[in-house]
Length: 272
Ligand SMILES: [Zn+2]
Ligand SMILES: [Zn+2]
Image (tube, rainbow, N blue to C red):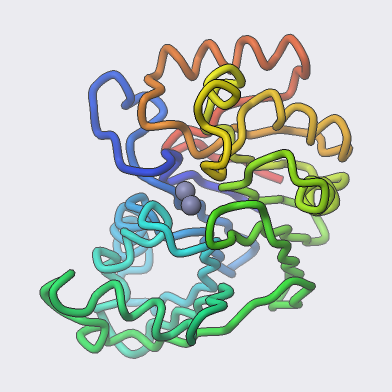
């Protein structure tokens, strides 16, 4: 399993010089397992992934399972700018998420309707399918994906990806403090090789003024890793106001509690 980060920022893109070492694009993580392609979230990093896939696949067809954790802008804003969706009917994109209020297809299409965007999804030539994905396990090709609800306004789905070679957990946009959701996320992360987890705030920031905003902090990430037996922690969904120096400090401090911690950065790759 190869994992590559295309967008690591939370809330809104932050293309400012002081943020560029970790990166300013919003959530998008690519996972390759053999020849299969899995994508987690379609924030602005999704656009750059599309460019890379176009050059890599050239005239070959692109097929991917795309898991969308929820529909806040920072997780879908790359969709209208993802080139391979426009290219040809032989490209296939299977979207998985839980829409709750109306069909997943409608939720995904509405963000491109007038007056929010100049073209709508009918301009996209690629084959698109939409699958409502609720809690539980789903076998796909050479992998089993498990979903679990997290604690976030309007809901957010965390994902556990299991293969023969390793277990990856992608759990972003989750606030601690609710006993049921706290248990969910620990169960999802149990024994994982790598846990990618929402670490948007500093612990003091969270306590002082960010309760109820639906996000976590690095100290809670460490608690989850230690209580779930996950092996390695990747801090994710960095706050727009946290520059590279701030994130460096977070990693340094977090390593006093648990050694295998790093912060997600655009372009970073992991092999499991
Ligand atoms: Zn988010
Ligand atoms: Zn959100």
